[in-house]
Length: 450
Image 1 (tube, rainbow, N blue to C red):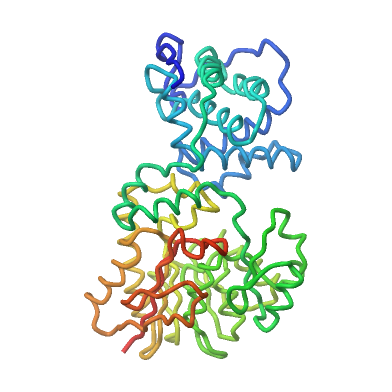
Image 2: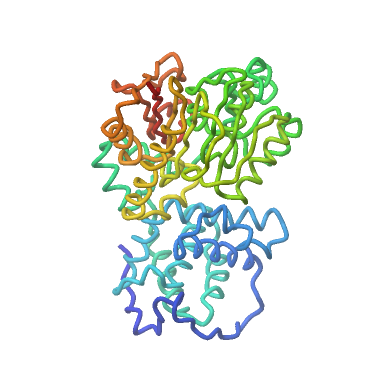
């Protein structure tokens, strides 16, 4: 273990500088090369970890001063490395200080970034230190330099696989057990997560798999390994496909809409499931309460040449003119199931917020059931690994209502290797289809109205 340094008070550290801003001191040397992407990465990490803002909603503001693709790529790499390995980075930092730095101390964030660059991005130590200290804005540079020097001297390393944040470690161990935790750790470690594409026309699956150099796990699906610009791939400009995780594509498949059927897609943005439904020939109405997110739905429909009626409204209050034959409800949730591509989701929700989401999900399930025509079918899904948002919601729904019953999901509707639960619903977890590249964590159930 690295030797511990003097505590923060002896080094002049000002804790919680998000709330107590220190006066910046002029740098004694010219601005070092590469400082701009590090400053942008710091701003984005502060947005996610201090203010609880989703990464994709904060990135444009944080990166507004970055002019080149390499700078943006470096900033994103730093942010991703910190978010994926946060617990272990903090363990290293805490091993080198007598008094624990507050979670909202700027020095802790800068140290996380510096260690992530050295141990995960192979950045030379001298370049890390030169670009870390100027980010402190007059804060405890001596402490920060001392921590880094101490850990470098001790050759302190990160574990091969990251440790999950404590909240999810405890909850998921209780819900799913050790094997899931190990698989989640492997997924959080990143690596080459494949890119899943949903095709506008499933009849051309084999052709697109060959053109894109990918494989298919279901008709209308292609999985590729790709790190470049999505817009540069064949078929993008023509709207032949859209990016959609395999698990996220299953709910619309399970709804199995028929040409001409009236289908509602509640909470539709950003539109992947809406496009799946529209491609079936169904008469689709996409409802979402966010006008900003509905713009994405419109853009995606235009690019793919598909059509759907778009309604910006709160689904709990919106009044339909006629009852639909089918409803897809992708309810607001904690989003924990998508952490392998979006590690920021592990830091955006508390246990209290999950309870609030569960209340909202129950209300939306009841509303969807009320809207549905007799004999119609409803698919409920969440991209969450929390049983309270999935299994418990459907169980409670059947306890509340006698006009609904489960329509069991069949194994032949799913990719090889996935099996529905004995109760008739589907739960995907880290570790499922791991040999084929894995998939996101989801819960989905199909019910019919009597």
